[in-house]
Amino acid sequence: MKHLIAKSGDIAEGGRIVRDVAATTVGVFRVAGQLYAYENTCPHQGGPVCQGLLIPRVEEKLNAARGAEGFRFDETDPRLVCPWHGFEFSLTTGCHPGSAEIRLTAFEVTEEGGMVYVGV
Amino acid sequence: MSEFEFSSGDYREPQITIHSDTREILANARRDIDRYKLHDYFIVDADSHHVELDSWSEILEYIEDPVLRRSGKSMAEIWPNAKNLALSNHPPGLTMQDVGGRIPHQAQLAERVESVAGEPRDLTLVRRAMESMGIAMQIVFPQPMLEIGLHPNPDIENQLIWAYNRWFTERILAQEPRVKSMLALPFNSPEGCLKTIREFGEKPGVVGFLITSQRQAPLFKNEYMPVYRELEERGLPFGFHAGPDYSVGKQMNRFLSVHAMSFVTCNMVHLTNWIINGLPERFPKLKTVWIESGLAWLPFMMQRLDHEYLMRQSEAPLLKRLPSEYMQEMFYTSQPMEATNMKLLESTMEAIHAETQLLYASDWPHWDFDVPGKIAGLPFLSETAKRNILGENARRVFRL
Image 1 (cartoon, each protein chain N blue to C red):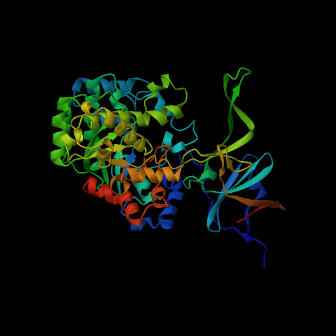
Image 2: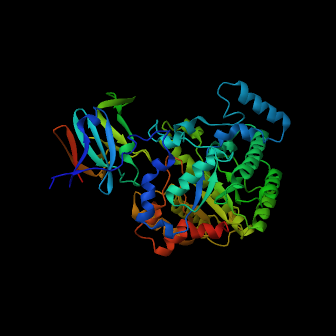
Image 3: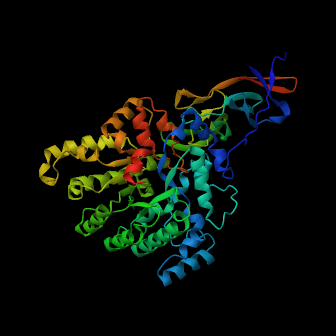
């Protein structure tokens, strides 16, 4: 079922809304102009993943000799981190970077006429 | 008819922070209460924590030695950052537990708490967590004080343990019958251990004693035998509470590595000494509880010690059975329950006789806490096993 969850202006760039919808709770994010919607339940222990920190992926750079040159942020890959235990998910795919089998439940999200809808 | 529904659902906090209410942080755990019918179970949480440093100024008042008490209060008053740390040995690694701010509740629970009849705010926080997870009774421990065995000054260690035990029994345990604790022993002093057991052993809410496992503790020395006998005669269990030791970080460069290893290696040492020196034979009625090392180390220890023992029996002549058989009579808290491989977890639970020996533990509010639903949702456990692990085993061990 399609649910009107918010006005477009309620979700600014880099922002989110987390709201009870039907029998569950949904988080809708707007990052780089794109909307993403996930169930607010972490596949690990059921934590409120959509209420977690949004932070860029951490990458470790190696030099030509395969020596480590330290950590840095990859600003092109936003990660959503469950606040219960730190399970981390790529916001764009919903997958845990260590195992694609561990993934968030995604919902279809659309934006029409200044309104945001999710299919739950 | 409209092609969509207008959602009238509640808005949730967009992001959980250190200021979020415990009941909001644990709102999803509350759903498990209905999902697994947790109110039908008697749930005992055998390992959880409060933040004693929030009450540090009160605890300093309980130091018996007047000179040390004055030094501690002075330190707290005039040093810029010592208000919540004076005299303690707070190790730097502890502040790395929240994964760089990704897990806020590990850093602090800075939520609003209305003062309740002068009670420490921690008591309100404990009640909120219990209510959110459907827990009937909670065994509560401190946090940085669990590193006290690494304090450079054993006299200060003993004074701080005594002060904390007095404060905790008077200000927390005496106020709330659903909160229990195993109090720390000043293990560098066998006489101090006996004094502690005799002073606090019958206080309301005291269900046993423990040593903080991060310490160089030759627990096989003869001086400790009166301590074990005292606990055995009183029917009080003896716990070993694990903790991190960042000194292993001299060989490790990531806190992930330090945490994964040091929470286990400390109890590996004590458990090996306990068994190989025949202490289960010397004190057969003394129950031991191994706390916060998880479960995955146990089948390794069983196989490793059995393997060595069979070839070197002459070095452990007090043993009448295999080390693993003694381990099957010990008790273990469940958290952090490694569950990435269900077959291994099932085998582990079978090996340790989990149905009678395992005690559910949340470890709340730490970053790797486990909700009761993690036990209730295990597909291979019988209904009886779930009921025992979630609370009935603890009821028996701690005589609740």
